[in-house]
Image 1: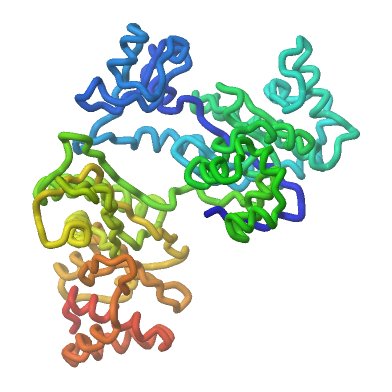
Image 2: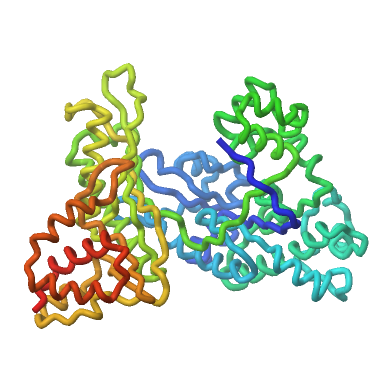
Length: 536
């Protein structure tokens, strides 16, 4: 359930930028002959030509919609170009789109705190940049206004007038505007400049919403597409929300929105204004009730997270109808493919961004044959993530078997899997200025040394400023449980007690290099090192 967050004391300028028909634009850049032509990107399968995931505006004029299949699109628009998403390991490969999205993020992040919300949308906190512009070159004192900014759509400002651009320019340059609107005007100019820069450097157009919070910016970014931007002055918020269907609001599209409609008769966001905060709290609890009360008034304290990289990596595949998986061997075959892709992505993240993932999670959707209670959910399972394709594949299969046992007991037939996915999460940055601890250990055996320095499957253990940073090697066996401890120091201590004296002597030299208040960590390192090399 949503929770209200404290609102900032100072006014903010938040933008939400959404790339227009992004997958289509990527394909048009790869093949310029598609520009201006009715085009759709299709995630291919052999049922009715596959599902459309993006439709160009030229194709939309013929009635082509994303909910259609490829064959249906051809019936509606015989001249449509259907471009298939690249395929790898028998499933869609989105890397070309991820890379293209990263190009855009790199440009947008130069002007403020940037949150990559998805493959094709970004939030920006432009408050500082807007304040700087207002202080150094306020629009009201500028001889000219950036042309693209004069094409903005300002709520409550007539958009069909012949002198529309002049009206927008006058709004942006008002000397008598309040401080909030002056900041918004600066934000509108900055966003226009960024959108033009994105177009020049990537050939992609994007639409944007500019407001005082994330909620409003997101709501209006798609109002005028493609390649346009919309600004929400504070004075326009109430009228804008009054007629907005409640289901259009983020977090109100599901059960909570349905409850508002069924239990309170709320159809629009404006209808919520008829309920006191106490009444909403009575129905939905203190936190959600307050959130609903604030939402009806366009208030939101949610901050833009400074995040350019994804919070997790996931790979999945659906198996509808007759393609469902009905035995362990078919599940393992697909899990191996998914884990291979996941391993490549987290290894690339480690190499390029110096980030390490800690948790492996398996999700699945399943059904039981000839069972009344066939809608029971297949439980998600997690364990510490061990780097290396083979290890991830091994652990993912154990997680599946554990989930299947909870879902179906000891029986091994009569079930079918319609969706599988694996996710690497709890990703953190490797601290800067770290060095491999192995650099400080000399081995007389060149073969042992080369084995240690091969870090292709496991992140290194590093330290900086006499403080050890433990990378999540997780060599312990996978325990398929969402709340299982990563390891038990007592077991490791027993292993350490059996180490030969010559190993202990060498390791004591290492221990002296670090504080002695991390005994559990030292035990882990000692065991790992003695497994890898033979010290003199």
